[in-house]
Image: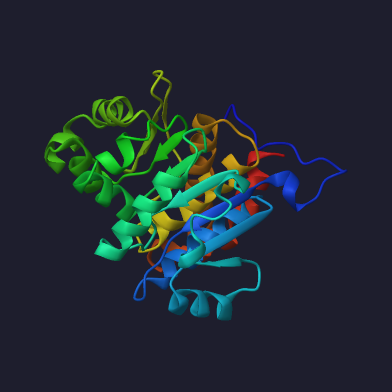
Length: 272
């Protein structure tokens, strides 16, 4: 791995390492909000603010005291105070979710780094103008093959027939670093940078694994890494976390929280 995590400096505080806003979760998908938020913190960012429904925030607050909460009514306040915005994990595709995502995009500075996953990708596929009209300059999208097919108005078979080409098409169409998740995830930037990941295994084929990845990438980006490097590092460390977890838990029993627990071990193997 040629890239390293941003350096930690002795004279620093929580604001030094970035503030992440996470628009995530819905009443029956609170786990995605929890996993993505905690992963950002575990990867090194200074703050993670979770914006979600009251029910989700209550559930997540019962699991951790490390997250700051923001009610949906305050979503568009002080958006310029965040270093990275991630959105989509467990968001749902309801009318309310679409309205919240539309408000978020409308209120964001086009230069604010965005990490977009899951239902935010699906909502953009259905209503692309809420995203394309803003001409965002710093975006990472993390689709799996079915989400990629929706972004391209194609089939999953077409996406899998040439994963790199599909990622390049998404990168060009949406002006984003594209993380196209397969067993060998590929990362492509709009300028043509390319990386094919070689870490991870089938233990990671579990609900919540993608939420952890989104949080990890966001946490790295919040510390100042450029978006392509943040995506590559996030994917690499995510896969390594899975490999480490499976050594003691087997490929059958690794869950998303086990990936989070092994982020520090992956970072140590990477070298800091």
